[in-house]
Image 1 (tube, rainbow, N blue to C red):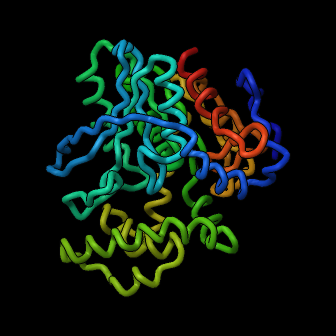
Image 2: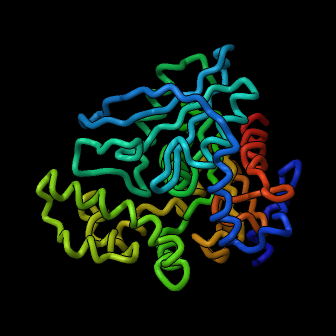
Length: 329
């Protein structure tokens, strides 16, 4: 990787993958199985959206009702029980922080009301959620973390709102973000990555889309949806038209967060492994492509939201510790 991409590590303990878990694919897939090591007690709350839909939020309360509140935006088809959510919320709770995982529409276990669901560039959704959280918690310091496409949405929001975002949140972290959606989709739509990752996500995306076609009588080819095997096919058929884009290319280009990094004013950490299977290292931003408020940290390994450490069977403590250390600085 070109050295100009690599910011000197600001982690107190730089990430190094364990010898027994080599390569980005293993580091990505194995981490999911470690969620059971982290116990979190959530309190669910339902909010109506500005357009008469709803989202569900899972809260982690604390006896001290502490003044720090961390908001976690999950990744594609993620939810509050995803391995990264459980490990981060468990660690935050240990430190006396409160936390909340807002579920994107349709991701909490119940279909949302409208034809639309969520997409990679839905920064308007981030905006009203964070604004309401701040309004209802005026005396708390709000910190935002985005994972994968949740990170893309968060970074896009930060860039769009510039200095005004600091009225809502103190700091932000984006982890394993597909900053360039065109490059990310091209990575995931071919070869072994299509089998390992695109097929995994489409296994749930297709049924949700088909259910919406029936429920809302959408003019979408259900047979083609069933036959879709790549993100381009699915986004061309469903995501783009339902959410107001011309096609997949238009959607990916307009929603990528990378062009917004130079406009961010809130102190933010962008953390991506160089061997993340979802984004080629060449697509990572250079220092001259980001504002002075953005810190880049690109460990050589870690996979996509992996970052497993320790002796077998390993733990996923490094990531929440890294995130919370940056937020607390």
